[in-house]
Length: 227
View 1 (tube, helix red, strand yellow):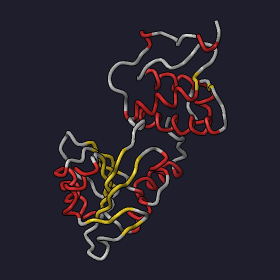
View 2 (cartoon, rainbow, N blue to C red):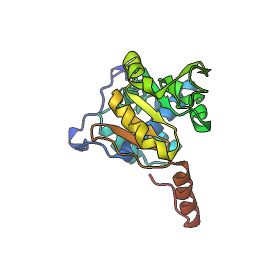
View 3 (cartoon, rainbow, N blue to C red):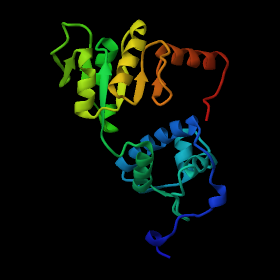
View 4 (spheres, rainbow, N blue to C red):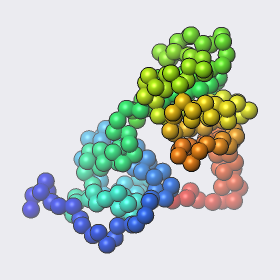
């Protein structure tokens, strides 16, 4: 049978059940980045062994992770890079554009605003907010800086569902509550403090000092990278 006509493997009994663990979703992002690299290098197919070796995972881990979402491999071929790339983007929700609100235009906020990786994955900061009157009304990296009181209006205008918090820790909870009231559904928090939001709101926190602490612990104790 011709390669283009080969059918995907169908072993429904091996499909994991229940929602995928957070670690699986994290690895999906790694698979996506590696597939983008392969596609740029004109590679059309990749095996689970090759994909796993590139990222430090076993082939079984790759197959198990992907099996949470369906069967994407072909006997004798492995995975078609373009096809798997498109499927993972659909699963992650990044097969569409995501307008994002950024609150806080300090050093970190400016760095985030200039980060090119957001655009590559179809995330675009469309509105920036800062309480400093000297910044309001300015254009930074092509994006207008607004008064935080205008957050509800801009969220509705741009259909913003995701927000980034890049303010000092003492202001983070207030900003989170403003975002929730404005209709934002997912918050990425860079403030070095835990925020409390309703269960319906999805949140993720990035504390760079904690990440370094985890690395220093691993180095001191000779730990390997988790898979």
